[in-house]
Image 1 (cartoon, rainbow, N blue to C red):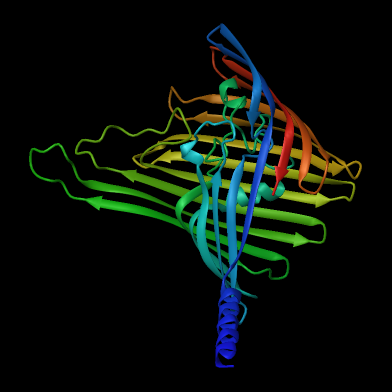
Image 2 (image 1 turned 60 degrees about the vertical axis):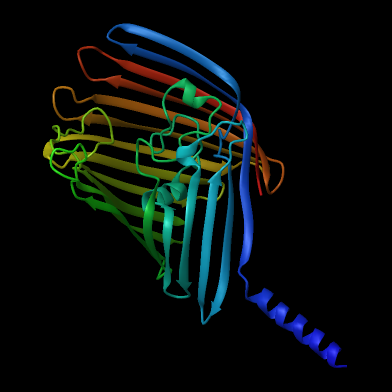
Length: 386
C-alpha cells in the first residue's frame, strides 16, 4: 500500500511539473519553384543584357524553421520566446540571414509586453501588415525592394534582411508593445551595441576608440472597423573612430555608411471592402554623415495596391508605385524609379498553395549620361507552411 501511494504521489508531482512547462510550437515555411529574370543595364551609352532561369527557393516567402513558446505565470503574466532560423533547401549557405529572430520576453494582460534579442523593427512589422504582396521576394515592389541583379533573383532566398528601403531587423534590441487601447497599439524599440577601447601603446598599430551602434524607433497602429492606419519612425546611428587618422566620411554612393545617422519613416493604410482590400504606402529613408550634414543620400517611394479572393481557392493581388533616389555632391546619384507587380495564389489547403508572381522595375538616372536599368522577374512554385 505504501509503495502504491508513493507511486501515485510521484506521478502526480511529475504531472504538475509537466503542466508548469511552457508550451512550444514548431513552425516553418518551405517554398520551392521555378524562378527567372531578365535584366538590362545601360551605362554611358553601353547596354548589357542578361537572362537567367532555374529551379530556386523562396520566391514567395523565405524558407525558415522556428520555435516559439509561452508559459502562463499566473495573474495575467506570461513568459514567451521565439527562435527562428533560415532554411536553405537548395543547399546554399546564407550566413548573414541565418538567425532571423531570437528573443525572450514577458507580457502582462491589459498592459503590454517587452522582449530582448534579435527582432524585427517597427517599420518592418508595419510593412508586413500593409503590403499587398505580403513581403514576397520578387521584384516590382518599391516599398520592399529586392536585391537587384538577376543572379540575386533566380535561385536565391531573396533579400529578407536589411534592404534598400528600410532596416528590417536588428540585434541587441529591446522592444515594447502596448495592449490595444481604443483601437490603438503602440510600439517602441531601442538598440545598443557599444564598445570603447584604449590604445595599446605609443608606436603600436593597435588604435583605440569607440565602436558604437545605437538605434530607436516608435510606431502606432490604429484600427477602426475595416480601416487600419500605421505610422512609424526609426533612426540608427553608427560610430567608428578606432583609427588614429580617420579619413573624410561621406554617405554618397549607397544607403549605408560608417559614421552616419540613418532615419527611416513609414506610413501605411489598408481598407477592407469585402471582396478586396485596398492598400496605400509611403516610405522615406535618409542617411546623413555625422561629420558633414551636407553629405547624404535619401530614398522615398509611394505605392498603391489591391488584394482579394475572387473564389474560395483563388487569391490575387496587384501593386504599382514610383519614387526617387538622390544624394548630395557632384557624385551623388539622382534616380527616378517605377515598379509594379501582379501575383496569384491557388489554395490547395489551409497550409499549401501554388503561386505565380511577376514584377517589373525601371530606373532612369537624371544626368547627362542617361543611365537606366530594367528588371523583369517571375516565380512559380509551391509553398507549404507548418
